Image 1: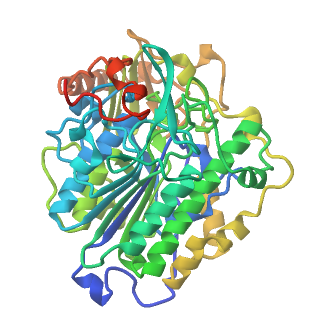
Image 2 (image 1 turned 90 degrees about the horizontal axis):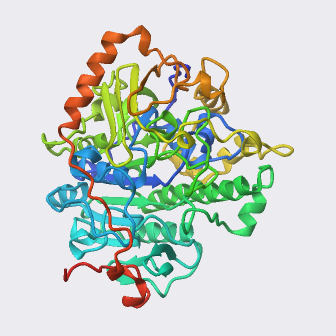
Length: 546
């Protein structure tokens, strides 16, 4: 169980908020940072000493830690849900993520967050991953509300060469996957996480403050590259993580360090620009880590059960923090927050009307004032893979055919091993760029605050994790599992036999929700028209003339 712990922060200066003279007439800036395939156990905020993430953690300590933040269990659905405020199954974007040779995208009939913000006068920029359509020009981010895009349109690229390998009708092929707007980025070089960080900083530095800024920084880290199997990080950063026992996990840790450094660099850039005190910063992951399988990245979701591409908690319950200049927004928030809630929540934060035809709920006042969440229900429906789940209050029902390999507890053993003594967490926090920037605003913390907070963020399983398949409930097409995820966050004890009436009601509610589902288009994974050799060896638009 996660112990409830409210962080108490003594502000060291006059009230900080949107109160600066220039901020009174200016809508707040929004910087939304999304990690890729980062598990619950991959940030030190949740109590692990293996991978220090001081910059990410500090945004939570001095802002709001989202204890129960949820998303869809895989990339494309999560990103489409964030952009639209609608569950992926309502827009047909559920299931297996888009491939680069698939002629499909987020329907253009869907209005997305940057389009709402453009109407409010925002400058809108996307840096990093898109992954909701690139086969036709109409699907591209610069056609859907973003002023600029520097990044990859598909699931991943090589961290140094920016190429993506994919199985095609003629075998394994490779093509350039990095673009600046609609032009292949042949002229850049360096480590991808650094490139995205530098681009974000450049956007912040050159931003014209006569309009508010919306910057979505969608990092690829810590996702693996090229079929998801290749972990890449600078050698010196890997060496800095030498306390991590498992060699693959060590590289993963280095990728996480670069991601955390990026967060610190962005916060510093906002500070130096003089706009940090009028900026909302959100940091989340898109889904859980892929500890094993075809897209393995050696991330860890422990002690949560399951992986990316699974409806179990390890696939959908994620790390999330929100920082605002508002002095009252400094606590641990226990209520449910789902990825679909960001669109209405952020629109409310900037004083805009919230659309009614969405699934997301405006939680701005709930989160900032630490009130009970207006959200009490969540769905994960994937007709392509054949599973579904419904969360209602403290209870979660999982149905359908969930691959057992994605349903187990993984990430222990050598993946959790530490050699010798890890770097001092307290030193890392105090030396971080985020600490320095927040200190200027009177938002830094004492050692006792974040040390106690980390310990209280650890999830404790009700029972010892079991790897005995006979003791764990696995859903099948004709079998379901019910868990009390408040008392049993590790989903170890099926209680469906004790709550037959509740199961009946939840199944009926799930069935009703499935009536809203738009079937996922069966993908043509190997469309020969997408071959990079036909497009100057790039993965680019290929279906506009069909």
